[in-house]
Image (cartoon, rainbow, N blue to C red):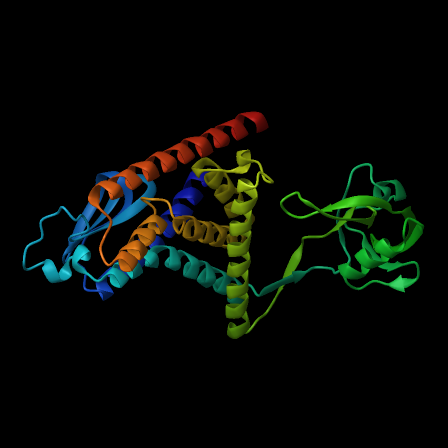
Length: 358
């Protein structure tokens, strides 16, 4: 129940934000909006306000904003002509479509700003606390444990994790004497580092160096921040997620990351449920990450996605005329086939993941 509730909350808010972007910019461009729907398919609930019917539809995996004259074959009365989407300039149509993904990215900035301004900025709980020990590693042989705080290595004080990494690397495999703090007491342990591969978050080997097989604690505390610092941190966090999303897609194309890692609605629902149980900060971070993903993926130049429409508008601006109707239809059919195939694939991954982990 918690999983379903959190999924509805996360996806519902993000779809609303995305469609709100299209809606508001359409209004700014004096386009008549006929429908604003959360979800697709049969109407569950609807209410008219002004020219627009606001809907909740049966299938929640998306939403749409229907504008007057959006379909070029649609008959538009002379009265509605100034408010028709297809009769607006190409740059106005471009902005209306672009607004959805942009609103998702701006919403991520807002979420992170909210977290940092209320909870504070996250900083490591302890600069040299060990978070985990690799099985069958020199650290395990030496008797190190998760939660140990490294005070000094070979007589040199360690205050940051960078000190720990540097001193272990510089040991060049010689015995490493470490002063640690555990359960209220200071202890001394000796380990001997071995050459190990250093991998990035995508599993690529980026270096080889002497290591003990320890990793830093991921526990953080939150320090109070000014609104300016919280806003700048929100921008920085959003940019980091944009970069990781783009790099993740590139690594999948390069086959560095297996395509089986791709997840769909079921995985999102499971993760949303886990984050809700962990607290509102974790849920908001997760929502921000998904919002960035939604914004970036919608900008991909695939017909039927916002990015595909942006490509069409760009070509129209260059050619000084829109693409031919038959060409547009073929691209749309290809886009629908591609997106449908991707949805089937990620659903398959989700189901396989459930059974293999079960």
